[in-house]
Length: 109
Image (cartoon, rainbow, N blue to C red; front, side):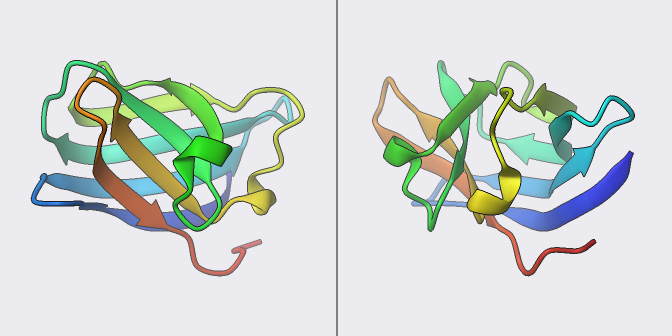
């Protein structure tokens, strides 16, 4: 897989979140969002979003976070251009709170 963007995951509002976030282009040309070496507070319904400037409400939900340590990957929905987004947000819907976020720098291609 070719790495396209990378960022460090950090906790928000007193919550713990750490690890690396990357967007890669796979062999089938689909984009994959990977959270690697993560350690994230366990929440009942943490969802992962691609967002512009952290605005998850207008972002793209890529999946539910079911694993809070290690490495997890999500295929981005067809038609989603990761270059249109500069942050990844983990949001707990039940408690309406941001758990963590990663902000991408410039494109790494």
